[in-house]
Image (tube, rainbow, N blue to C red; front, side):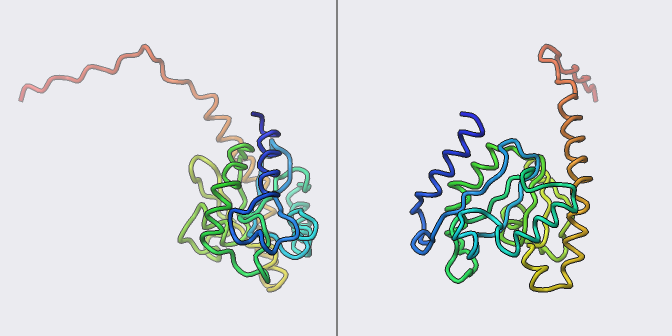
Length: 213
């Protein structure tokens, strides 16, 4: 199955999902969107009011700011895949519960990551960061790339944090401006790994010298 087919299958499953209680109050599920070969994947927390109405991620005020941030990095929305930890809006925008996070990530998000195979994952907010860097504090490590499972994870503040607390705006803007350099670093590392000679299968390990004493 191709990446396109896999993502379409996941999207159809998300729209019909009843695996947790979040489906009860949703208007529309929000599977996520973007090219199947995106080099950068952004993962937020969950849909808000506007996302629930439209069935698309980051289309409210946070999404407008996200578009600005992507522009600062020389990117467009169509260049990246955008998704969320949970695919349905939590009631009154409350935090997603652990069982909701576990159900949605195992059923959908991790499958999306596997299909897209992005060079870089940008986590937006603490809930998505905790999927890859549990126990860390986003205020301490935001903007600092970490390699997890062979993939570059870049924890960043959620755009909503900058809207609600203006002092955070310069921090997230500076982090996004570094994104092109981070992606270039990830692509360089991948190219070096791909060009490294594979060990010959017919080579025998060197004989260990016998110890007489």
